Image 1 (tube, helix red, strand yellow):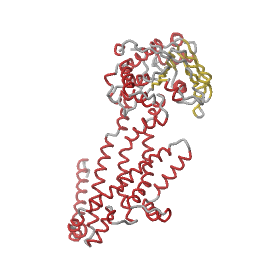
Image 2 (image 1 turned 45 degrees about the horizontal axis):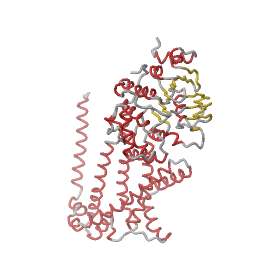
Image 3 (image 1 turned 90 degrees about the vertical axis):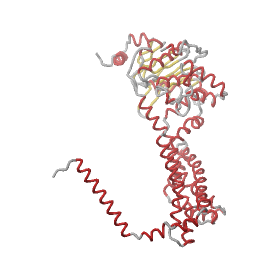
Image 4 (image 1 turned 120 degrees about the vertical axis):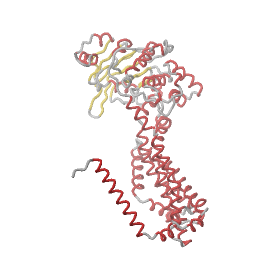
Length: 280
Length: 261
């Protein structure tokens, strides 16, 4: 029996719907919904966690991430410039740094900094200092690669035009290349901020006072404190989403009207004209 | 189109001469320039013609050292361009350059494109730089678009802004690297008209071009390059009208009559 294309499409859709319905029915039957509600969606600990989960937990997560990102941005910019420098030693150092910190788990940096800084240098870092420094060290490696790609995405002619006008190299870099690269890297940098927000949770391995607790710490403490299942973790997770979802929407918006796109469109328009003779 | 720009109000007071002596340049194993000699007197307009890959763009880019020559000597006005100690930035301020792809700064307005270098490099005040920029934009007929972004302009308009931008630095030599090759055919004329006015105002110009009509009307001298050597040079009338070298004849036949009838 030969099926027409439309019948085949309808059949495929029907099979997908049937599988979905089957899975839903099985889940409804095998899952103890009361237990799920007790351990994940218990209203009591939720009420108990407010407002501290916002005023302390969310606030600290934002603070640690913010400073980590800012210093990571500064470090990443320096590394990116080193990566494209003409002096080879700079390039080697930057490459080694980037490969090293992109290649190891971020949690190692938190441990090394949290316990090592006082052991090795006698430094007594606060939780804010530890968390944001660790995030900056790791973030700089990723940010450096993003910025390097952005700098190299600016057409070569831009730098040439600036140099041909008589701008010194540093001036052309600052006024022409970096502002254009910045627009190109804004969306990927926003994604980097999202990753750092999540990585700020790793500070839990070092431990911290209650007033310095960020979201993950609060969630874990909530579990032991209220003895009411995993609900505090769910609350913490939702708080992370309050930060990351808007950032991710922002990144997508910026990607949609990225200057790189419109300039590509322009390039297409500027096709070579056939050889003509005569002055108009 | 020339009523757009009016009569040449521009007077170039101190055009620079260019002397090129036995210039060599290779990219990897490919020798692009094989000993070029060329002299451009102050105020002269020289058109470089030749097939793509003949080395004419590279020659132009050696003059303001966007490319570093391997051997030979270039003098631009008082500057020894090929001298290792030459102040490149100071020299380039004397040399305006117009590119095939315009290379306007897309993140700046038309006006800012014309004021950024005078302000940041020559340390002019904003008023001073804007007055001169608006004057130059007026000369290319685009004063009314000063607040636009380059992306909002047609190709021809962008190239006219690029010329105005170069002129705000008061150069004494202008280099044009196929300035109309990326333009829609109907906007070629407006750019060529401005270049003609600039030539009449007394600017020294080296123009890489395929516009034989422009070369015939404006050039004091036409230089035909092929495979990195100057094959033939002379007045436009001689080189375009009555070429003596077989390679020049062949090139012109293909350019002027692409279908080969």
